[in-house]
Length: 363
Image (cartoon, rainbow, N blue to C red; front, side, top):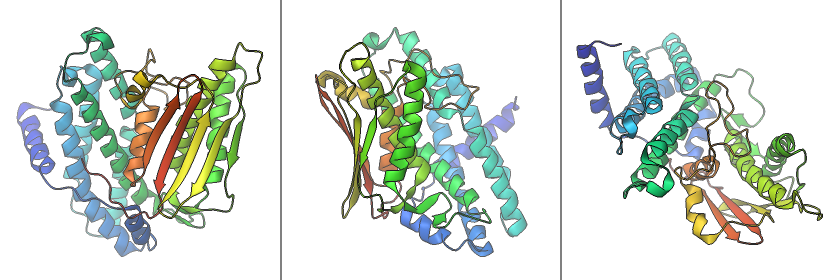
Protein backbone atom coordinates (compact mmCIF):
# COMPACT_ATOMS: atom_id res chain seq x y z
CA UNK A 1 0.00 0.00 0.00
CA UNK A 2 1.40 3.42 -0.95
CA UNK A 3 2.09 5.79 1.93
CA UNK A 4 -0.21 8.81 2.19
CA UNK A 5 2.27 11.42 0.84
CA UNK A 6 3.09 9.14 -2.13
CA UNK A 7 -0.63 8.55 -2.81
CA UNK A 8 -1.25 12.32 -2.60
CA UNK A 9 1.63 13.05 -4.97
CA UNK A 10 0.28 10.49 -7.49
CA UNK A 11 -3.24 11.97 -7.19
CA UNK A 12 -1.84 15.46 -7.92
CA UNK A 13 0.05 14.15 -10.96
CA UNK A 14 -3.08 12.34 -12.21
CA UNK A 15 -5.07 15.59 -11.87
CA UNK A 16 -2.35 17.54 -13.72
CA UNK A 17 -2.05 15.11 -16.64
CA UNK A 18 -5.79 14.44 -16.75
CA UNK A 19 -6.34 18.15 -17.43
CA UNK A 20 -4.13 18.16 -20.52
CA UNK A 21 -5.43 17.97 -24.07
CA UNK A 22 -5.53 14.62 -25.87
CA UNK A 23 -4.38 14.21 -29.49
CA UNK A 24 -6.54 12.11 -31.82
CA UNK A 25 -5.08 10.11 -34.70
CA UNK A 26 -6.79 8.76 -37.82
CA UNK A 27 -6.45 5.31 -39.36
CA UNK A 28 -4.85 6.90 -42.42
CA UNK A 29 -2.28 8.76 -40.31
CA UNK A 30 -1.36 5.59 -38.37
CA UNK A 31 -1.00 3.77 -41.68
CA UNK A 32 1.13 6.42 -43.39
CA UNK A 33 3.36 6.96 -40.36
CA UNK A 34 3.77 3.22 -39.74
CA UNK A 35 4.65 2.51 -43.38
CA UNK A 36 8.21 3.59 -42.54
CA UNK A 37 9.06 2.07 -39.15
CA UNK A 38 12.59 3.50 -39.09
CA UNK A 39 14.49 3.90 -35.81
CA UNK A 40 13.79 7.63 -35.92
CA UNK A 41 10.05 7.17 -36.51
CA UNK A 42 9.75 4.60 -33.72
CA UNK A 43 11.60 6.99 -31.40
CA UNK A 44 9.22 9.84 -32.33
CA UNK A 45 6.23 7.54 -31.78
CA UNK A 46 7.51 6.46 -28.35
CA UNK A 47 8.05 10.11 -27.33
CA UNK A 48 4.49 10.92 -28.43
CA UNK A 49 3.06 7.89 -26.53
CA UNK A 50 5.03 8.74 -23.38
CA UNK A 51 2.97 11.92 -23.14
CA UNK A 52 -0.31 10.84 -24.80
CA UNK A 53 -0.79 7.63 -22.79
CA UNK A 54 -0.15 9.58 -19.56
CA UNK A 55 -3.00 11.95 -20.44
CA UNK A 56 -5.46 9.26 -21.54
CA UNK A 57 -4.80 6.92 -18.60
CA UNK A 58 -4.95 9.81 -16.08
CA UNK A 59 -8.37 10.84 -17.43
CA UNK A 60 -9.78 7.36 -16.95
CA UNK A 61 -8.28 7.05 -13.45
CA UNK A 62 -10.02 10.34 -12.55
CA UNK A 63 -13.33 9.08 -13.97
CA UNK A 64 -13.11 5.83 -12.00
CA UNK A 65 -12.78 7.84 -8.79
CA UNK A 66 -15.84 10.03 -9.29
CA UNK A 67 -18.68 7.69 -10.32
CA UNK A 68 -22.20 8.23 -8.96
CA UNK A 69 -24.43 5.77 -7.07
CA UNK A 70 -21.44 4.41 -5.15
CA UNK A 71 -20.05 2.61 -8.21
CA UNK A 72 -16.53 3.93 -7.48
CA UNK A 73 -16.48 2.04 -4.17
CA UNK A 74 -17.32 -1.40 -5.62
CA UNK A 75 -14.39 -3.83 -5.20
CA UNK A 76 -14.22 -4.64 -8.93
CA UNK A 77 -14.10 -0.94 -9.88
CA UNK A 78 -11.39 -0.26 -7.27
CA UNK A 79 -9.36 -3.09 -8.82
CA UNK A 80 -9.63 -1.48 -12.29
CA UNK A 81 -8.77 1.95 -10.84
CA UNK A 82 -5.61 0.46 -9.28
CA UNK A 83 -4.61 -1.00 -12.68
CA UNK A 84 -4.94 2.47 -14.23
CA UNK A 85 -3.01 4.16 -11.40
CA UNK A 86 -0.23 1.54 -11.63
CA UNK A 87 0.00 2.05 -15.39
CA UNK A 88 0.05 5.83 -14.97
CA UNK A 89 2.90 5.49 -12.45
CA UNK A 90 4.83 3.12 -14.75
CA UNK A 91 4.66 5.61 -17.61
CA UNK A 92 5.42 8.73 -15.57
CA UNK A 93 8.35 7.10 -13.73
CA UNK A 94 9.82 6.00 -17.05
CA UNK A 95 12.67 8.37 -18.00
CA UNK A 96 12.56 10.50 -21.13
CA UNK A 97 12.89 8.40 -24.33
CA UNK A 98 16.10 9.64 -25.97
CA UNK A 99 17.56 6.78 -28.02
CA UNK A 100 16.86 3.34 -29.47
CA UNK A 101 17.60 1.50 -26.20
CA UNK A 102 15.14 3.74 -24.34
CA UNK A 103 12.57 3.17 -27.08
CA UNK A 104 12.88 -0.63 -26.88
CA UNK A 105 12.61 -0.55 -23.06
CA UNK A 106 9.57 1.77 -23.34
CA UNK A 107 7.93 -0.62 -25.82
CA UNK A 108 8.39 -3.55 -23.41
CA UNK A 109 6.88 -1.48 -20.61
CA UNK A 110 3.74 -0.50 -22.56
CA UNK A 111 3.40 -4.13 -23.69
CA UNK A 112 3.14 -5.06 -19.99
CA UNK A 113 0.55 -2.32 -19.46
CA UNK A 114 -1.58 -3.75 -22.27
CA UNK A 115 -1.38 -7.17 -20.62
CA UNK A 116 -2.30 -5.74 -17.20
CA UNK A 117 -5.51 -4.29 -18.67
CA UNK A 118 -6.63 -7.46 -20.51
CA UNK A 119 -9.49 -8.16 -18.10
CA UNK A 120 -10.81 -4.61 -17.72
CA UNK A 121 -14.13 -5.27 -19.54
CA UNK A 122 -15.29 -8.31 -17.51
CA UNK A 123 -14.05 -6.71 -14.27
CA UNK A 124 -16.03 -3.53 -14.99
CA UNK A 125 -19.03 -5.74 -15.85
CA UNK A 126 -18.69 -7.33 -12.41
CA UNK A 127 -18.72 -3.88 -10.79
CA UNK A 128 -21.89 -2.92 -12.68
CA UNK A 129 -23.43 -6.26 -11.66
CA UNK A 130 -22.59 -5.47 -7.99
CA UNK A 131 -24.24 -2.03 -8.34
CA UNK A 132 -27.38 -3.52 -9.94
CA UNK A 133 -27.67 -5.97 -7.04
CA UNK A 134 -27.32 -3.16 -4.47
CA UNK A 135 -29.96 -1.07 -6.25
CA UNK A 136 -32.39 -4.00 -6.28
CA UNK A 137 -32.33 -4.83 -10.00
CA UNK A 138 -33.23 -2.92 -13.17
CA UNK A 139 -36.82 -2.13 -12.05
CA UNK A 140 -35.50 -0.17 -9.05
CA UNK A 141 -33.03 2.00 -11.01
CA UNK A 142 -33.03 5.58 -9.67
CA UNK A 143 -33.40 8.59 -12.00
CA UNK A 144 -30.12 9.61 -13.63
CA UNK A 145 -28.76 6.07 -13.95
CA UNK A 146 -27.99 6.87 -17.63
CA UNK A 147 -24.91 8.71 -16.36
CA UNK A 148 -23.38 5.26 -15.72
CA UNK A 149 -24.06 4.21 -19.31
CA UNK A 150 -22.49 7.43 -20.65
CA UNK A 151 -19.44 6.89 -18.44
CA UNK A 152 -19.02 3.29 -19.67
CA UNK A 153 -19.32 4.39 -23.31
CA UNK A 154 -16.59 6.99 -22.71
CA UNK A 155 -14.46 4.59 -20.71
CA UNK A 156 -14.60 1.71 -23.21
CA UNK A 157 -14.05 4.00 -26.21
CA UNK A 158 -10.94 5.38 -24.51
CA UNK A 159 -9.78 1.83 -23.77
CA UNK A 160 -10.09 0.92 -27.47
CA UNK A 161 -7.92 3.96 -28.29
CA UNK A 162 -5.26 3.20 -25.67
CA UNK A 163 -5.03 -0.44 -26.79
CA UNK A 164 -4.87 0.58 -30.45
CA UNK A 165 -2.01 3.05 -29.84
CA UNK A 166 -0.03 0.55 -27.77
CA UNK A 167 -0.80 -2.39 -30.08
CA UNK A 168 0.15 -0.42 -33.20
CA UNK A 169 3.47 0.71 -31.72
CA UNK A 170 4.35 -2.79 -30.48
CA UNK A 171 3.37 -4.40 -33.81
CA UNK A 172 5.58 -1.99 -35.79
CA UNK A 173 8.57 -3.78 -34.21
CA UNK A 174 7.68 -7.01 -36.02
CA UNK A 175 10.78 -7.75 -38.14
CA UNK A 176 8.80 -9.81 -40.64
CA UNK A 177 5.27 -8.41 -41.06
CA UNK A 178 2.78 -10.06 -43.42
CA UNK A 179 2.59 -8.39 -46.86
CA UNK A 180 0.30 -5.36 -46.73
CA UNK A 181 0.19 -5.26 -42.93
CA UNK A 182 1.33 -2.08 -41.13
CA UNK A 183 1.30 -2.66 -37.39
CA UNK A 184 -2.26 -3.76 -36.60
CA UNK A 185 -3.64 -2.37 -39.87
CA UNK A 186 -4.17 -4.70 -42.81
CA UNK A 187 -4.05 -2.46 -45.89
CA UNK A 188 -5.64 -5.26 -47.94
CA UNK A 189 -8.26 -6.59 -45.56
CA UNK A 190 -10.94 -8.77 -47.17
CA UNK A 191 -14.26 -8.25 -45.34
CA UNK A 192 -15.57 -11.44 -46.99
CA UNK A 193 -12.73 -13.47 -45.46
CA UNK A 194 -13.14 -11.89 -42.01
CA UNK A 195 -16.90 -12.52 -42.20
CA UNK A 196 -16.22 -16.17 -43.02
CA UNK A 197 -13.72 -16.67 -40.17
CA UNK A 198 -15.89 -14.82 -37.63
CA UNK A 199 -18.93 -16.90 -38.72
CA UNK A 200 -16.99 -20.14 -38.30
CA UNK A 201 -15.97 -19.09 -34.78
CA UNK A 202 -19.53 -18.08 -33.86
CA UNK A 203 -20.98 -21.32 -35.29
CA UNK A 204 -18.47 -23.35 -33.25
CA UNK A 205 -19.70 -21.64 -30.04
CA UNK A 206 -23.34 -22.19 -31.06
CA UNK A 207 -22.61 -25.83 -31.83
CA UNK A 208 -20.95 -26.27 -28.44
CA UNK A 209 -23.88 -24.69 -26.60
CA UNK A 210 -26.83 -26.16 -28.51
CA UNK A 211 -25.47 -29.18 -30.39
CA UNK A 212 -26.26 -27.60 -33.78
CA UNK A 213 -25.99 -24.23 -35.54
CA UNK A 214 -27.81 -22.50 -38.41
CA UNK A 215 -25.88 -22.00 -41.66
CA UNK A 216 -24.33 -18.64 -42.53
CA UNK A 217 -24.45 -17.49 -46.18
CA UNK A 218 -22.09 -14.67 -47.22
CA UNK A 219 -22.58 -12.50 -50.32
CA UNK A 220 -20.19 -9.94 -51.81
CA UNK A 221 -17.08 -9.48 -53.93
CA UNK A 222 -14.42 -11.93 -52.67
CA UNK A 223 -11.67 -9.83 -54.32
CA UNK A 224 -12.63 -6.56 -52.61
CA UNK A 225 -10.17 -5.30 -49.96
CA UNK A 226 -9.75 -2.07 -47.95
CA UNK A 227 -7.52 -0.90 -45.06
CA UNK A 228 -8.82 -1.78 -41.59
CA UNK A 229 -7.82 -3.39 -38.29
CA UNK A 230 -8.55 -7.12 -38.63
CA UNK A 231 -9.11 -7.89 -34.90
CA UNK A 232 -11.62 -5.00 -34.65
CA UNK A 233 -13.68 -6.23 -37.60
CA UNK A 234 -13.47 -9.85 -36.42
CA UNK A 235 -14.75 -8.88 -32.96
CA UNK A 236 -17.72 -6.93 -34.36
CA UNK A 237 -18.65 -9.62 -36.90
CA UNK A 238 -18.30 -12.40 -34.32
CA UNK A 239 -20.61 -10.62 -31.84
CA UNK A 240 -23.28 -9.83 -34.44
CA UNK A 241 -23.27 -13.28 -36.05
CA UNK A 242 -23.24 -14.96 -32.62
CA UNK A 243 -26.37 -12.99 -31.59
CA UNK A 244 -28.14 -13.88 -34.85
CA UNK A 245 -27.24 -17.57 -34.54
CA UNK A 246 -28.52 -17.66 -30.97
CA UNK A 247 -31.82 -15.99 -31.93
CA UNK A 248 -32.44 -18.37 -34.87
CA UNK A 249 -31.34 -21.44 -32.91
CA UNK A 250 -33.63 -20.68 -29.97
CA UNK A 251 -36.57 -19.91 -32.25
CA UNK A 252 -36.30 -23.12 -34.29
CA UNK A 253 -34.84 -25.46 -31.67
CA UNK A 254 -38.10 -27.30 -30.97
CA UNK A 255 -39.64 -26.75 -34.37
CA UNK A 256 -40.13 -29.21 -37.25
CA UNK A 257 -39.07 -26.46 -39.66
CA UNK A 258 -35.47 -26.22 -40.85
CA UNK A 259 -33.66 -23.22 -39.28
CA UNK A 260 -33.17 -20.52 -41.94
CA UNK A 261 -29.59 -19.33 -42.55
CA UNK A 262 -28.09 -16.10 -41.27
CA UNK A 263 -27.23 -13.92 -44.28
CA UNK A 264 -24.25 -11.57 -44.50
CA UNK A 265 -24.04 -9.04 -47.34
CA UNK A 266 -20.86 -6.99 -47.91
CA UNK A 267 -21.37 -3.78 -49.92
CA UNK A 268 -18.53 -1.60 -51.11
CA UNK A 269 -19.62 2.05 -51.30
CA UNK A 270 -17.65 5.20 -52.08
CA UNK A 271 -17.59 6.39 -48.44
CA UNK A 272 -18.46 3.29 -46.43
CA UNK A 273 -18.04 -0.43 -46.53
CA UNK A 274 -21.37 -1.68 -45.16
CA UNK A 275 -21.92 -5.18 -43.86
CA UNK A 276 -25.47 -6.33 -43.22
CA UNK A 277 -26.15 -9.32 -40.99
CA UNK A 278 -29.75 -10.55 -41.37
CA UNK A 279 -31.51 -13.23 -39.39
CA UNK A 280 -35.00 -14.68 -39.03
CA UNK A 281 -34.68 -15.18 -35.28
CA UNK A 282 -37.97 -13.54 -34.32
CA UNK A 283 -36.71 -9.98 -33.85
CA UNK A 284 -36.61 -7.71 -30.82
CA UNK A 285 -39.69 -5.90 -29.44
CA UNK A 286 -39.59 -2.17 -30.28
CA UNK A 287 -39.72 -1.33 -26.56
CA UNK A 288 -36.50 -3.29 -26.02
CA UNK A 289 -34.49 -1.90 -28.95
CA UNK A 290 -33.02 1.09 -27.10
CA UNK A 291 -31.76 -1.21 -24.35
CA UNK A 292 -29.57 -3.37 -26.56
CA UNK A 293 -26.97 -0.58 -26.67
CA UNK A 294 -26.79 -0.13 -22.90
CA UNK A 295 -24.63 -1.93 -20.34
CA UNK A 296 -27.22 -1.91 -17.57
CA UNK A 297 -29.86 -4.33 -18.84
CA UNK A 298 -27.83 -7.42 -19.62
CA UNK A 299 -29.73 -10.68 -19.20
CA UNK A 300 -26.54 -12.57 -18.37
CA UNK A 301 -26.44 -13.70 -14.75
CA UNK A 302 -22.69 -13.64 -14.17
CA UNK A 303 -19.83 -12.18 -16.15
CA UNK A 304 -17.41 -14.84 -17.41
CA UNK A 305 -14.65 -16.17 -15.20
CA UNK A 306 -12.18 -13.32 -14.70
CA UNK A 307 -9.14 -15.57 -14.59
CA UNK A 308 -9.70 -16.90 -18.10
CA UNK A 309 -9.07 -14.91 -21.27
CA UNK A 310 -12.52 -15.63 -22.60
CA UNK A 311 -13.97 -12.31 -23.66
CA UNK A 312 -16.98 -12.97 -25.86
CA UNK A 313 -16.81 -16.75 -26.11
CA UNK A 314 -20.13 -17.69 -24.52
CA UNK A 315 -23.45 -17.28 -26.30
CA UNK A 316 -24.92 -14.88 -23.73
CA UNK A 317 -21.67 -13.36 -22.46
CA UNK A 318 -22.36 -10.39 -20.21
CA UNK A 319 -24.47 -8.36 -22.61
CA UNK A 320 -21.71 -6.00 -23.71
CA UNK A 321 -21.13 -7.36 -27.22
CA UNK A 322 -23.48 -4.98 -29.05
CA UNK A 323 -22.61 -1.67 -27.31
CA UNK A 324 -18.88 -2.42 -27.48
CA UNK A 325 -19.14 -3.41 -31.16
CA UNK A 326 -20.76 -0.04 -31.86
CA UNK A 327 -17.83 1.71 -30.13
CA UNK A 328 -15.32 -0.25 -32.26
CA UNK A 329 -17.23 0.82 -35.40
CA UNK A 330 -17.36 4.47 -34.27
CA UNK A 331 -13.70 4.52 -33.27
CA UNK A 332 -12.61 4.86 -36.91
CA UNK A 333 -15.62 6.89 -38.08
CA UNK A 334 -18.16 4.11 -38.74
CA UNK A 335 -21.34 3.08 -36.92
CA UNK A 336 -23.61 0.17 -36.05
CA UNK A 337 -27.38 0.23 -36.49
CA UNK A 338 -29.85 -2.46 -35.51
CA UNK A 339 -33.25 -2.62 -37.22
CA UNK A 340 -35.69 -5.21 -36.01
CA UNK A 341 -39.00 -6.65 -37.14
CA UNK A 342 -40.67 -8.28 -34.18
CA UNK A 343 -42.13 -11.65 -35.16
CA UNK A 344 -39.65 -12.03 -38.02
CA UNK A 345 -36.00 -11.11 -37.46
CA UNK A 346 -33.25 -8.54 -37.11
CA UNK A 347 -30.91 -6.71 -39.49
CA UNK A 348 -27.64 -5.29 -38.20
CA UNK A 349 -25.90 -2.71 -40.42
CA UNK A 350 -22.21 -2.32 -39.73
CA UNK A 351 -20.84 0.83 -41.44
CA UNK A 352 -17.05 1.12 -41.74
CA UNK A 353 -15.45 4.29 -43.07
CA UNK A 354 -13.53 3.54 -46.27
CA UNK A 355 -11.67 6.82 -46.21
CA UNK A 356 -9.85 6.24 -42.90
CA UNK A 357 -9.52 10.01 -42.36
CA UNK A 358 -11.76 10.41 -39.32
CA UNK A 359 -9.87 11.11 -36.08
CA UNK A 360 -10.39 9.01 -32.96
CA UNK A 361 -13.32 10.30 -30.86
CA UNK A 362 -11.65 11.67 -27.74
CA UNK A 363 -13.95 11.73 -24.75
